[in-house]
Length: 310
Image (cartoon, one colour):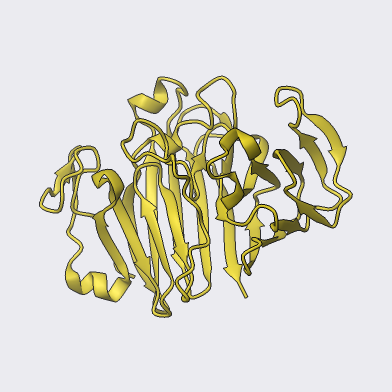
């Protein structure tokens, strides 16, 4: 395993000569290491730092350090299975709208800002390795004055991203580094490229539902009776205790398996006419933890998502 840290300070977005930030030394990612690891650091939209992972089979994933947001997952035929909205901005003034944004330590509205703060902060590369020829990177996020102003706890989050020929896996670990217990809920707000009229999801039958249509503030409780769930209009529904494997037909000829460990719930979302410019081109199928997770000091909560195609 090769330990690699990136040669820049994400706050100043300086490439690639800066080797010290916040008192921490950063080693450079040499051309040799880049070739070996299939990991490349570059400037993305808005000159924001972006990691590009490439597998020997030709699949590729892009991750912005702002928000720790995976914005692209291309399979070997070049098709991108993720979607970034046309109104997405890359200026750090708001989270990146699309790909796989983090919702932590809050999903949806609540005491702090919508979907929490993890998608609004700079993550740092702490590890890069090569597993059987495939690239793996680990990002970290720690509490800072920005997060403490709204959620006054010390934490350490690690986000491990693994790219294979036909799969993209993530592992999120949240450790309580505070002296008191804290609770949170979280989700991966995954945007899949899709033809909304042809998209469907299997594996949700029997789950308890909290349907936010028509009133998001007063979800209607129910139970999913359909074998195949479609997106005929506005969709915003939480599925509690969902299956650990769903199958998305994106309506574009791709069947995507969405497996998970410890993401107990799922969310389906499409804004329909509220986002007329692009609602036809994506669906969100999100792994989530809706009920609060409480962890004591030094305890860690871990969840894994595995996306794959046949």
